Image (cartoon, rainbow, N blue to C red; front, side, top):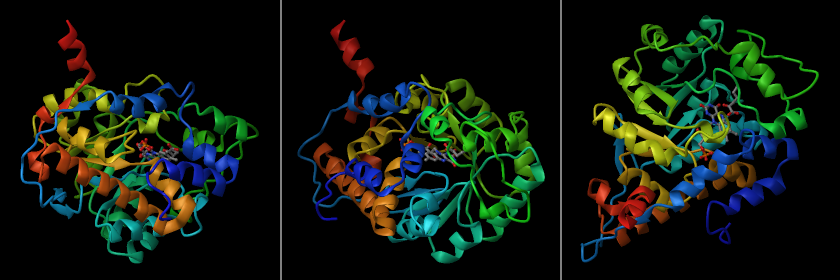
Length: 363
Ligand SMILES: Cc1cc2nc3c(=O)[nH]c(=O)nc-3n(C[C@H](O)[C@H](O)[C@H](O)COP(=O)(O)O)c2cc1C
Ligand SMILES: CCCCC(=O)C(=O)O
């Protein structure tokens, strides 16, 4: 593994390690996959305004999210079905999160149970949820997460329908077998054609979910609630008004609405209206420590990593996930040093120049 120098290299290793159907599921985005490219490209259009002659002999990357200390503002995004990537599934990912001292957001569609993940290690865990048409199913899962010591609920709001992922349609991607739901509800769907994940989503998830349901979620849990998957100032304001505890600016890794904007290009508009009242996190296209720095400079408290974690898991299990996080942390640390920022609080809006600002300066 010493030969691996950046997180992108894990993508190729994952491709070699996985059956095509699973690699395509992890790798793919919706339709033209325009947003998939944009999520990464938009980071590349942001340049630095590094400051020099600042004492950077000690760099402290640590921060807190909802009061929980983490070693760097780099967390694990919820991604479905880790056992398709590695036999140890979410347990391996959680152990890596614990070893790296960061937070893992476990997917509602995990292949290990909530209790198995909880007892495997002492990582701080949040649970991502979808809302079932049968609300009692989601309510029971939330209760179990609370009992198992999960620290927050992340409600994903960008999947009223599943995006059209053409590779999954062609491959007839299998429908998920989810141990969490055993005895609660059957997750068996048997589509004759197309994506089994899509068939699962359309038969089980509640497309009628709306802002008023935050109140319902509030009534069934005492845990902090984050809303994941909004991209506009309008929705950010709705989220604050609905009383949520945090926001994740996300386009679901470009797997839902193609031609959604790259997340980093809309972060500031969200941050501006939120005005520091609740934490704003971001995911989508974070592949370098420089990307982490850019997101923080534009106002995010932390970023979440999706695909690179799954690629690390597929290629090398728990050690692969650890390596992915360590590489991002090392890159972030040197970015802080070379920008003149010894601590997270030293990172400011003035440390980056966005594409908009570049264009403006040409006028
Ligand atoms: C294979 C895969 C599965 C995902 N599963 C979920 C999920 O179960 N729940 C969820 O809220 N988001 C899910 N996401 C979206 C991620 O949480 C995250 O928003 C996205 O992957 C971030 O972009 P990145 O992959 O470019 O880092 C998934 C993404 C991928 C790639
Ligand atoms: C029913 C949702 C499938 C998991 C998911 O969120 C994804 O694949 O992006």
